[in-house]
Image 1 (tube, rainbow, N blue to C red):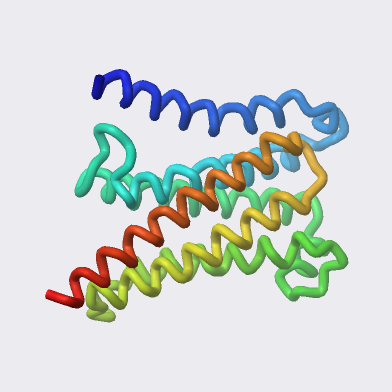
Image 2 (image 1 turned 120 degrees about the vertical axis):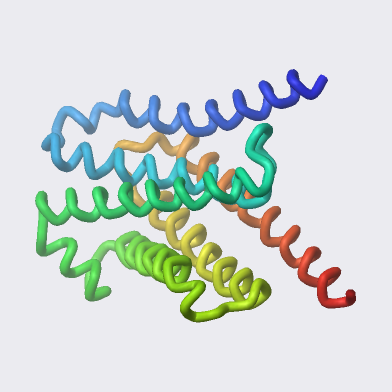
Length: 202
């Protein structure tokens, strides 16, 4: 019974991750794009799929990756997520530097750009906070509060950024992926709040 449940969970995650990538791969818009632009776009798609795994790993919901193993993998996936976002932005910079500059300065005429930039800076801030956690001597509750707040900014910003873009990602699979990321993140946030409340009463 446990094995069947584990297989079902992993199969569902693989489907949630694989379908948006497969749908984007079949997009007719790819025929009109440069290789660098395509690579940048798929790096962004990969980043969005990694964001689905992150809360599941942090919450210990994936079979075989319970705490503390799940949290260790969570940190590694966070590093891969950083690389994916950097690749996404770098590719866009190569293909159109003025558009990237406008986005970074929040003067881009496309609304999705600002949401993406906010999510990007929140992701960088999360990585910096994690790297400096010991030096800053953050307590567990302070760390959870800061990390969770930044994670919410990343999820909301990335989801709106992806949904507003009319590009290679297929609409239904894109919206479904964003919704799953939001639901998974919300569940972890709720669980952490419950844990903090119980801890404070001891």
